[in-house]
Length: 92
Image (cartoon, rainbow, N blue to C red; front, top):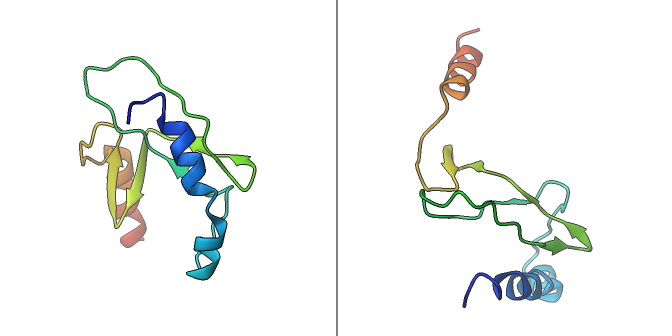
């Protein structure tokens, strides 16, 4: 599958609401975002039109997953400001 086919296939997969309901999975489209993993050398901003329950999903450059910050280049780094905020919250 190439990048041009990805939005169509992803929207078809996201549209399988009967499978989600059967497995008691519910999505809040306003809280659902996606990260497009790319090579570090890529400077071109690709946008995919992904929708869930007729709402367009927002693309983000990084997200928290199981306590780790994952960015679009799979550099499992945390921004210094995130680390400071996290540690400041623990000790105040």
